[in-house]
Image (cartoon, rainbow over all chains, first blue to last red; front, side):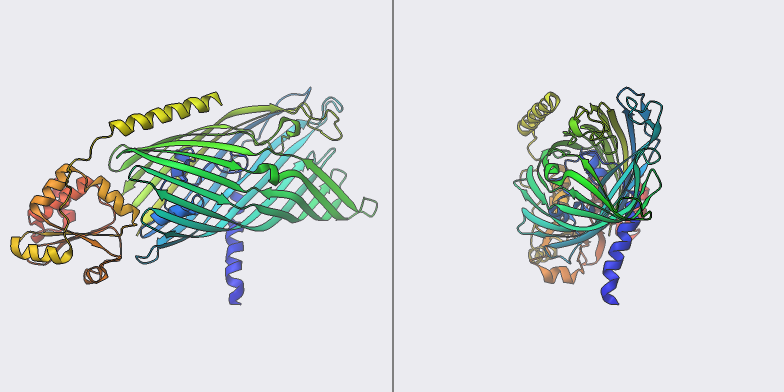
Length: 416
Length: 155
């Protein structure tokens, strides 16, 4: 019985968090976890962190001197538009995605070891277009829906060690839980998929080195998470239900980050991160395979390939933190990451398009409490599908998709 | 990408300027820290209050305390004139840490000249609050009120 308790708790925690995940904006990744990181544009690899090191550079967990608990989250407000070739523009339905974070960290006694555990949303995405024109060039007047929702949460036990007074190392084990559902013109020419889920494991290793009083450098490496979705249900527009549905070819990518932080003056901290996210190995052609139909006349197996062929992403994050008073720190940041989505394979179902982000935030400290806030604005980016003009293989040829986003981050931390 | 390049150039300029314009830390000689044994001897001789700073060499928040408070010229001068400052590394001086029941860094303990504990505080302390603590102890206000009451009386 005891053996079941911990895995059970992991599953329950992840499942509680998953419905609350949503859009993220470095591909499908959040630009930063926690209001401190977000306020600095996601530049956090070489910046001291508390609990949020669980989702960032695990080596920074060593800056936790005693015990700290953090609770927070973000509210994401995406804005999207889809204009099919020869059709009219449809705006995304109003959506708010709450993205929670909870973490606890502590130093083990006065030793060089720090440990922590946290649950957080690694990312995801989702759209909800209603009454979109379905290939208006071929089927004028026909309208239907496009909806997608991908959520990915991680539960992360993390450990960090002060190797020397200047060198810290850390590692996180990520137990991940992902969910996916989508509607692809479900009432006319397509189908609806729901209840796809997957458990996955991966890890992150991090290091930080304090060069001197002013400079520190850090780096992280995150392994790939192969996400094998199954347990779903597919319903075709004609009403046939397939009871066994799986999705192959969907992977959360490996990532390499390097960062530098510079204490310009006692009150001013500058930081910069460079990241490489290997989407090209992770997201290629995603195939939905449906079997076990409820109609004997329907094909026994249905294969639905989504050619995505994402590009690798280079992310530059720059941030600044200024101590305005003893109790108030203000932050600002900028984050750029090229969109991994190529124009040839652009789909309004998975339009991870935004590239430029501007952020601002603050921390107010009151006794043992920290109250953090950050605002992110992802500037509008648009692309038009210029791939294969054959509508049978590329139903979104000529579609123009725009994407923007506003995010509000909150976090409360208590040290004890 | 042009915007990114401009930001990188601007950032490099800021780093360069701030590097050369950074002020020299005030109080060149800093706080005259003693070991606990040295401090005890000195306290017997000078009858001044003792300030104990418990830290770890790898404690980030202790370093924050050092940079934000112990590098301030006014604080340095006041401590050197009015206190017997003692620094205790919890990793190396476990007996002293045990004596004062300290397992949290940073921790400050102020010992009155008669050997009694005048004040004790955990975590990073802001400079202004730390200055009020120094005054509270030197003015021997701990004999008549606790520190919270003293702080309230200052506003």
